[in-house]
Image (cartoon, rainbow, N blue to C red):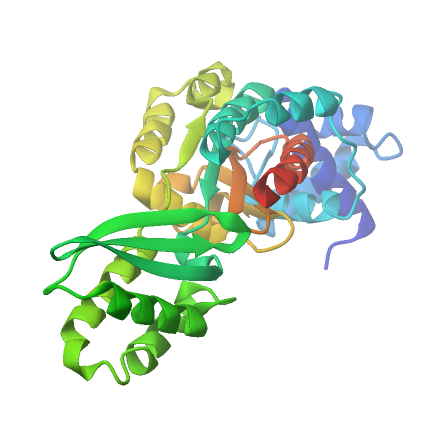
Length: 338
């Protein structure tokens, strides 16, 4: 358990390093933040905090650098504070509202906007279709073994695919199959009803069991397919940060961004259904993320769930980043309902 003064030292060192990008010395902390404490007192506290894992020291004559443990303490503290919306909020809201090309176009724009506003890497992702509630399923015979599979999701979002069945089915039989699937699936996500469908929908359709089963398998493939790629914006901006002047660190970030599927899965894994998720440095299980932080905020509407995020250095301006993400996520909530 840290004393009040130790907490103040940790917060001051983290804040100073975020702002200045240089290891914080006891004299600086005493002069700028803890004026009632002498540099010697702060130096002793720093030494104790280093032993406790909150600071590291590049060399004996240098100041202290905060560790992931110190950043976590700092982030948990700022999460308790009321955040002020960025001055550009109304401008961003207007610009997002003017984009009528669909949610994917909006998320492409938002990921770039996040990068421009922070100099970090902006990311945006859509939830997998299997988590969206189903409203209705229809099967339309196109001729021969080809059937048009229509899936209407919550919010009126329609997905379709031409599928090939093992043998021909009449339109009456296809209507019956669509009706049975809808009866079971309506109001539920595909992940909730997938296994149930194979047991109950096919009951009484033994004569064409293989063909109907194939239709459900193809529906499963359509809904399990990730609905969109991950949207990434602002990767070029991190070059302006001193944290990435080391070419090795910059290449690590580029390598991470090139692994689109792995990055999408990581964003999904670290996100939460409500509120802000902040994963800092060593808290990341991926080796390439050990020197980076990931901040994620969900935006949920009736039909889709989006995730907005930022990937940046350990000394990310967390308070500013969280405020920007929350503002843009709130704007997106309305878009996702449409």
